[in-house]
Image (cartoon, rainbow, N blue to C red; front, side, top):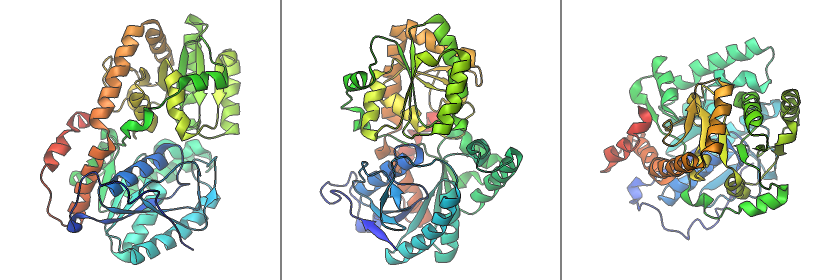
Length: 435
């Protein structure tokens, strides 16, 4: 069964960049995940699809039955494997149920390609890529794979496959197998692009295209609403926003905050997650008890997408504790757009410069991470400067309206179309991110 959801107001706004009929393409976005959802790749797929739709292309998001009811898809069209089923707390990572949904998604994708005269399959993440590869073989449509991570970096952390060595072996196999078959790959970070190239993927087949932001998203933040709701008053607020899975290294964050708490006993760590994960939260709370910092932590889950800007508006410092991150953390872009001073490990500092738009410390050094937070809480002038520069960086380099012009350039290449003027200039706007 196929369910097509109409786009809210899809014909009421002019396209961002008018295109002739010959330059408008029909795109099948493969989202092998609950959609829409208030985290990670699902958010990027939604924003990318709506922007491409506004540019004049016809975007068909092919996805599961489930998703969050309170998040609007404004322009793209949605095709589901069955009647929409609201789900407010989607599970991140693999599960037996998702394998069954993926078979249904493949059948649906094939029907959508045929009925909607799809020009290009644009698949996201590993499951989407595997489905997209199969659909490419069946329909002879070109496939663009958007790579946002490596399985060797994440799969074992989901605890879905046991023992861990088996998960790591399968992950390495997927990392080798999946990139072989797409016609082109976009990697969300320079590190991820270089990983593909070093393992034999032709450099001309891989472009570095980061995730993006919608500049207006943080225009109407209401921090006082959050302070009243959670009785947050007076304390210096250190904030993390995101899921609590093992690969996020929340254990590092807690150990870093223990360093903060020793020097600034009134500081508070606010953990804001879009999803409820009782098992992960329980594990983290046990560590917080061992470290003696439980009374200084507020755990919040779930939260709505609309409330995210208001939560971040409360923060004095925002933290990412994931080291050696091959992808591009979407939370980093949110921190930047909110104008927050950021402390993070080197591996997560995508497109940032130390003491210009973030305070960056060596990977795995929890004490340095904690001392970095203390530095910014004590030096408010430095914190304000980093936050202002972070916002300027994200607005200059990560606007979806600019990023989608580069994606469109790849579409034209895959379809053998002549390139429009200005593409080279658009490409060089991202040169600093590839260095």
